Image (cartoon, rainbow, N blue to C red):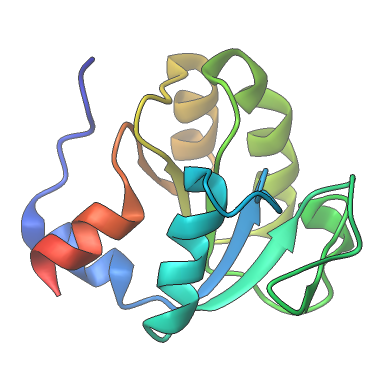
Length: 136
């Protein structure tokens, strides 16, 4: 699967943003949707879980949607199947954030184009944990 064409410097710049909403964050510690945001939290990122099936993950309040988050968000990190990404991207656009990061294995050209047209940077088919370990 292809990935975005960001340079290492561009990815480092994105990783300097610290407020991350994680769509699809899991309570299950064996899933990437749990251990990736946990790693990010342990490495200086301010993680906000978005999961309508629970109230709290890693001691942090869970939100039903990005729209429900009161504070500013820099990055929306998406752990949902590619064919489910579009509604989350549409919601994220309304939040006027800087980056939508689609985790490894996630790619939705229609949603990505919509975000870019709204002035939002899009990273796709990359793992934030792996990129942070590689570049930071």
